[in-house]
Length: 619
Ligand SMILES: Nc1ncnc2c1ncn2[C@@H]1O[C@H](COP(=O)(O)OP(=O)(O)OP(=O)(O)O)[C@@H](O)[C@H]1O
Image (cartoon, rainbow, N blue to C red; front, side):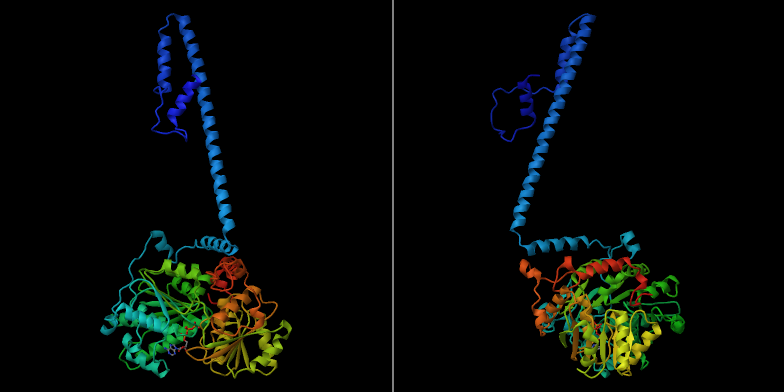
């Protein structure tokens, strides 16, 4: 084939970049495919006669084939080289463009992009649903129906009027068809004996989380409820369960082997015990006048004998308050079933999901036979957990009072620089700030014991509680401190979440926790239920700078005094020019994800055994 032939073929097959479709090519000859041409040549050769002529023709044909093969190979090679050149050029162009764009970005923007990439990478957790539901692709789409309706005059309010009420109480909501906020307990149609009991305990008007959270939960909706420490979340998630159980019991009384209607999961035994005590008290108040039936509640936590509750287990069961490990054990032993269970509440839900209980929660969910209403409550709920939880709930309503993870404004926060070796002596001085009761927090169990020993030597009536103490010791510490027999309680994180002691005057944080959420929970043991309290925190050279930054921002947010040694700490992100948003993993305001202390910790925790939780919350 001549060069012109090649040129023609190339032109005909693939227009060059300069090729114009409307150009007229005078030298145009129609393209004849190879097979057709070969056929034509063969026909021509076969017209030559004789054997010698035939073998000549065969030889000619073979030469022709060889040549054409070589030409095709050469064309393929050139085409490949051209393509490779183009790809290389494209890659170079993209790289050049990215480098130019990157050079235009500030260090802050680059850091934000890096954070977003990490967040994306850690998002790959499985949905919070039972393995059976996940495997069978069961996905509920509509919330559970309940018979509860707000009073007519509230239903007649406009969306604007509802919103005004929410604005008045600083309540933020997200979700579809959000039930209205209700300002008075009586309008919530709560049975009179419970209202009487609440009034006798100075619980007259609902707190913001209650006035929006209770109508949402009464309507059967899944809810993520976030509000300050000590703002009454317990009532907001217990009342709806009591009402559901009451309705079921009144429809058809429960007999032995039936129930429970709902469960409340807590991350520690102490919190579960406290919630159980509350539920039992409210249920007793309900049944007191004999107008309403008795609802039965069981406490399922590690470290106690379930035989003590066999009298309840032998009747119909309405409510279970539990820590995950013991609950799974009871379910596996078929001491009760979830065949009729339709209410699952998690208190301190972010901790439940994050502290290595995630698989336990999934396991517990696998015992449900039907759709359930899920309620998640906490004072801290970083964005990462909120997003994860939202994916797992059905048309959830988010009710948020204040920023998730913000400190309670009724707590006066004092941060003091105290050298490590001076802490113990200064502690005694610090105890003089207020009358008892006082809680002292330390992150380290040995330090908790040392502090208690030191205080006892100095004549201070102190008890200690941490995860390595026996259940009896833990119960004794809580009981004697609650009753006022002891003035001071020295505690590790176990007592920081959810525990509601009467009128704590002062919280002393002897060693600042690494995670700012823990700090928020710890100072939250005072300043509860509208009262004020003081929190004194010791920091020094041993406190990581990033923790100090988180603290600085938290103090600023709460309008508290920032001591000079904190104000001088600069945020490296400010110099980079990025937006100073909170960390989506832990809610800390002083760092991004890449520096999050919790990320590293939670990965470590997830690898640790779930049931040997340091605080003994599990089994
Ligand atoms: N409507 C109310 N009015 C007055 N006091 C209330 C009201 N509701 C609850 N309380 C009281 O407020 C205190 C704190 O309530 P609760 O323990 O439920 O707080 P919480 O929001 O769960 O706190 P935490 O985040 O620390 O767990 C309790 O002693 C409770 O009796």
